[in-house]
Amino acid sequence: MNEVDINKIEGNSIKEIFAELIRDKTFIRIRLIEGDYERLTLMTGIRKKLRNPVFLIDYPRGFKEAVAGSSKWKAEIEFTGNDNLKYSFIATGGQILQDEIRIPFPRSIQRHQRRKHFRLEAPDGTTLTFNVKATVCREKVIDISLGGAMIALVYPGDKDPNGLPFRIGDVLRDVELVFPSETGDHRIDIKKAAVVRIQNGRSGPRKYCGLQFIEIEKDQITALTEFIYNYQRRFLRKRLRVNA
Image 1 (cartoon, rainbow, N blue to C red):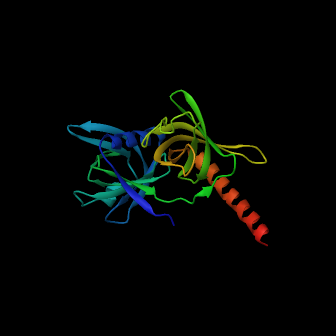
Image 2: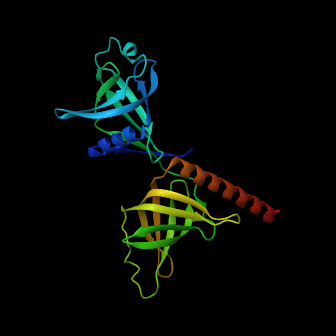
Image 3: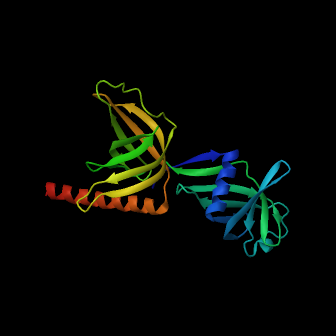
């Protein structure tokens, strides 16, 4: 089982996440801390009331009866973000209207980041392509997982290997991951990937860059999962034949 890091999200980032939930009509799960009540619903809007902003959710059936007699109920709200990670926060109190509930913004949201993914040595010829400052970069992929990739940047002898086109923390957009195969190239589209590590190679003018996939469509995650699984299975079969 993968270990999990819990990251805290605060400030304007909360509003941005809520705006995505509303735009994408993403289901959220609301569960009362006290009592046996759990429902799926939708976030429908954001309102600013004095200094304390509130968000609106579509009224889930039976909620009023579930909190009857409680002046300040607490509920855990969970959802899956566009990065396919779990998010959660505690909502405290709110105003029940006819067809929706108005709830104060939380102070923070927790993002449950998978710390480790199964990492696989990439097949020969696997590349990752992205644009940096109007320049197309097509780099060799060393290893790959559902969470990210390690790529190798090779520089000619007359070029400064420290003159990288990006730094740790930069976000690459519209990244294309290509796996070669006998039946044709497999392409995976990654909306956003963050540069999380840069290290020197052991020899030659080479840098290794670790990328974390931070936004990828669910169908692309499925395609990447299937490829990694199938490639691993073929690799194990080949090794078993060699050792037989």
